[in-house]
Image (tube, rainbow, N blue to C red; front, top):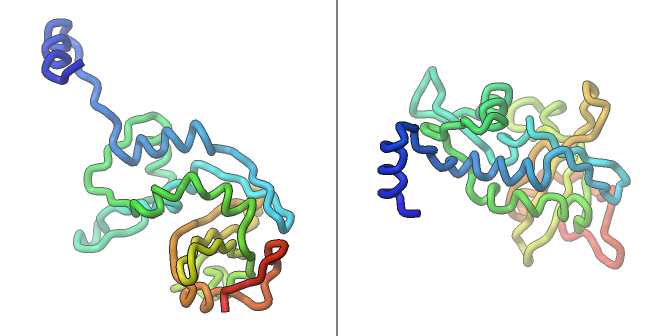
Length: 194
């Protein structure tokens, strides 16, 4: 139906027209249908739990900093996820990393069959500012220099290993974060992180 007809029909029936969901809400709805609460068996072996509360970090969802509107800060999961769960999230003022969003549904494959896995040298728990939370860094190669990484850690509250973050990067960046030797290298492969 065209939108003009929908507006007229809504007015005639005296009902509010339903707004289509924003891109982040659409992405979350798709995540809920295909990935939420999945457990991915990795080659370490470890079972990695995908949880909705980490969704904002996976797509790097940010909102303006109340103290300085020229800056963006990571969105708080406990604020954003309930709205996403209810289907009422309004994206106005928020931003997200579209490249992370496009690659979101490839994360299970990265966790199941990485080229290599390293201990994360930049673990936020160890280094403080500038670090990346996660004990293990899963790496998948795309050409000579492009890499997709995913970081996992054991969550003592849940008693499970969870996916913390995943994003695109380059070989040089991975070199700075990867403890050598790797804890895992794919069969018939070699680690190309250094």
